[in-house]
Image (cartoon, rainbow, N blue to C red; front, top):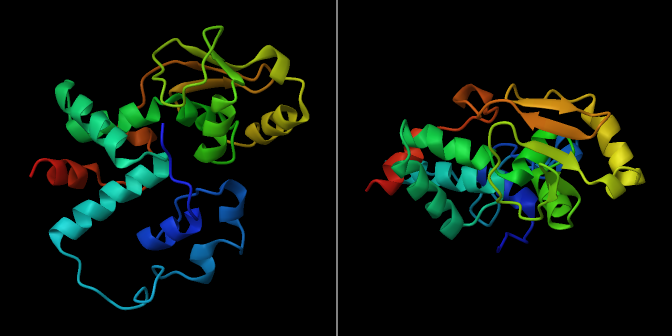
Length: 208
């Protein structure tokens, strides 16, 4: 699946907020938002009045960038969310949260979703005992996501497990850092989303 390969700090600056796309770097003084809190480009510092459409577009772009998804795949997620029972916006966020790369990130085994995605692509994780290397794989209740047996003894995963102990997982995940695994105990709820997202703006944009 295609992915964005450009400078990610520009994305945070464009959205005017930290999207935590570079993991630990985002918490330091080296963060681009901390140094240049205006949009990139020649006219980045000019003030512009944002229309309703502009607000809706920016919200969609922000969510795409948070989860590392391009337009075609994001549109497919939205169409699936529309067909599901319940609130479309909340369904959309739940589908994004249930991606395997996001689950790995939420477990704490990745400083960013991009790193978690790479670890999944390299085949370091299993779901219910079977290796899965598809970042967009949708997990479900009672699924067990674990680090593959022969990856657990590597220095990389020992460091990740140690770092994961200091992180607080969402309520829908039961994480065992010692065993390097997590059980999905419920589906992601709206209150589990820790980023400032106004999903209704995305629904309004796609409903035009």
